[in-house]
Amino acid sequence: MTMKTEMLGIEIENLHLAFGPTKVLTGVNLSIKPGEFFAFLGPSGSGKSTLLRSIAGFGPRPSGAIRIGGRDVLDLPPWKRNVGMVFQSYALWPHLSVQENVAFGLRERKLPGAEIARRVEEALDLVGLSHLAARMPNQLSGGQQQRIALARTVVIEPQVLLLDEPLSNLDASLRVQMRRELLALQRKLGLTTIFVTHDQEEANSTSDRMAVLDKGVIQQIGRPQELYDHPANLFVARFLGTAN
Ligand code: ADP
Ligand code: MG
Image 1 (cartoon, rainbow, N blue to C red):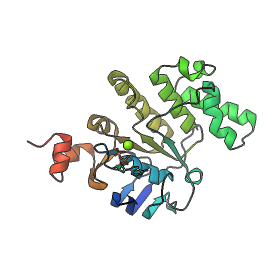
Image 2 (image 1 turned 60 degrees about the horizontal axis):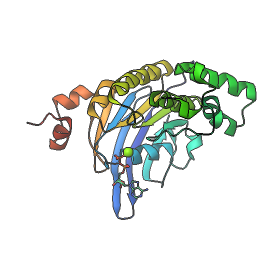
Image 3 (image 1 turned 135 degrees about the vertical axis):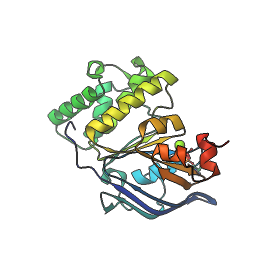
Image 4 (image 1 turned 30 degrees about the horizontal axis):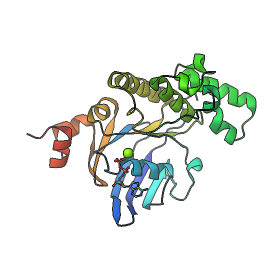
């Protein structure tokens, strides 16, 4: 985990998904480069979580194609996609210690005890919380819980990191600090990362490129500055606050 893994790109082609009569994703096309920090930005209900969950393999199967590292993953279960996901509500198991929370996914994979111990220590080290290994979740601050949720995800050594509004439960000043930490961690691990947020400042300050979504349609893709300087349409301009 301390070594950089092989970096994988993600290609999404003509992705469609509906819940009953509600079209949630309508023809999403997207190409994310290996090692890129990519943001999905859009208002609540625009389909950000659904798109991320589709990449991770949760929820109903969309039509279209999703390739990770060139491999078609649409018919693979989540655990065979090399992705790690941090959910919007990153609830830790309340009855398990920090150490046990981080080890949980490795135990499910039936790794040897010594290997589990080593990887958990590395993951806790990475988020700077080795000293809290014996604590219970209710003895941690919000920011610490968030770091443990991150450690719990990177410990499985994913090649793609999917983050669904991971900072939204934190207060404003901590959010700013945590997004710096997140970015530093991403650079260190060299993980292709998709970061979902409804906060344009958060997307702007972290991402190499971003996609702005509205009603399940990508409105624009580009570097943050490009979108601010040249919004493709009125929705993007209004959403980014650049419309007069
Ligand atoms: P966002 O993450 O951008 O807020 P979501 O992807 O959660 O948006 O939701 C997009 C749309 O899909 C919303 O209209 C939401 O109500 C609908 N939706 C999401 N999940 C389900 C589901 N399991 N069943 C029915 N509708 C859903
Ligand atoms: Mg969401």
